[in-house]
Image (tube, rainbow, N blue to C red; front, top):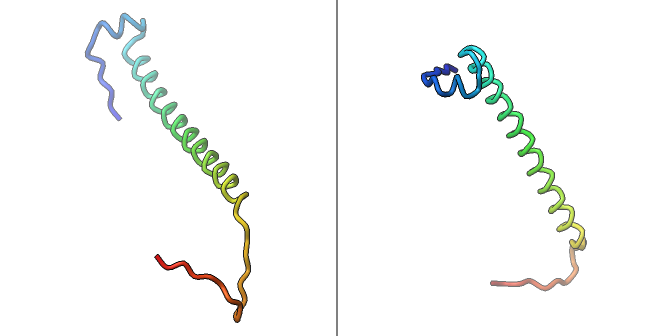
Length: 74
């Protein structure tokens, strides 16, 4: 990844030298990756919670050969 600082205003605003600014930008990119992984983990946890809530209401039924059952035809 290559980062070029072409604005003097940015350098003065953050009071950093260009090398320090580049390092800060790279750290920001790494932090974004970590935040994305954490967000993905939260989404997966939420899906598991929804699945547990849904499966709580599911009633298991066993059908054996020879039993009569209703068949819904749509």
